[in-house]
Length: 613
Ligand code: AHR
Image (cartoon, rainbow, N blue to C red):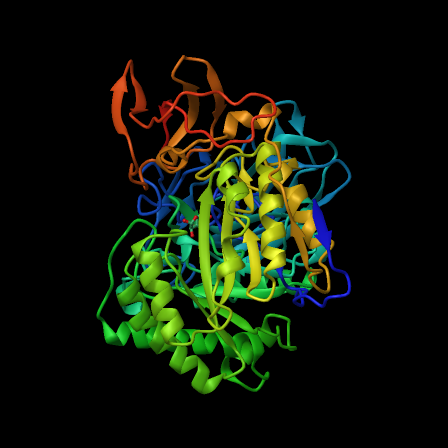
């Protein structure tokens, strides 16, 4: 029974309570939300991003062409360019099955080109069935200059190819094809269907750009002096300004990031959808499976100064150094940054906190109104978590970011997680959570859990499901909220839960009490009693069977095995080419309809395929 007390005034629920967490994982940016249709547009893919890459990945050459890195380059940050021979052509394969165009819609092509002798480029869009738009010709002569033409698609196709052919020798760089019809019509904008799906959630905030992504190379120097060719840390300053001057970088998740979707675009998108922007900067202590901290004080101070500059970029007047750059990019008004996260899932709480405190002191001294968010490491419990929380509590930190990915029944069992949190301590930002799976039971367990977040809205201030996006052909992490390929997108059941809560944020908690244990019956039995979820995280295509051999369920929620360790109870072995975990067991009792007890199962967890590149 539920007893509601409508007369009592419960905690206020902030409009910003539920938001989204955008990370460039699963090709969420390039080949995803960023509307660019050309893959590897600046010929910068390299083995530093992914062992399988070359500067010509996604391109095919007809005739002669080579990628060149010499003093004739477009600029210092855009190292490579293509030297295309006379009478030759290059073709780009786009993402997934190709370049997607829709009949009647316009597409803007641009290229930087340099030619000693006057030449004519012929730009075509075609698929196996023929042309997709009338071919365009571009006359090129002289030093590097940007050339533009536009197409109107005569047919719809998701298998298109973009070809640039040249009569005479020419140097090409930053070859780009954009749909005119981007979200809100911005140039260098976002893919409309994906942006609209996110906007329809009505998120209170957008956390970006990661996640583990912000740990990319965060121990390394990133100065111009160290060269632009190497793997560098994620730095927001690399992601603004003209796109051809944004040095591409290796992405933590094993691919290249063009930074075409950069900090300006993140702020713009947040503003467009009425959400509070919430960036996360690296803290110079690696998390995400790595345990390193740097004592390079000069590097730390540079990161701290960059963070101050970021706040100026977001909020500063147009007369300030970084506010002026924002204005030059088209947004003289401030972006109203109020919250900023420092660090993500650091495994070394003491080392992290020492550095966090330096960031915090510098930010609070210059911008006392900015809320600086700390974190509690990668787990929902345990020694690292406890130490992090102790340090945060003792230092009276404003807010602590928690992350956890657990089984559906963990979410059902932990609805009361925040009931006992210290009301005098830091507030909670639940920056990442999801139950492991993309089925209805997952969405249901998340909804049940979110009622517990909302009941504790006095202490839980922000919450975001993770990850947000996944391109079905380039997946590093499951489950995900919104799925897509190069021409379609679709929502998970968890999306509907998030939308329900975000579209209906209450003003206040209405205090209530519940008595009696809800009966667990029917199909959810497949998820009841699993104590092995944490150990399955490194595998794709997992099937879970009870000891008598009957299948409880199968799922493919695995992660990239190359990045995650096998931890947890039980032992692992390889049988018949399969990874098998055993010894997890307790009793072997199936749940029957009407049975309200929790049970452990004697389980074998099989991964039929090892995930990874
Ligand atoms: O959301 C996917 C990843 O999960 C994030 O990058 C990281 O913070 C967490 O481990």
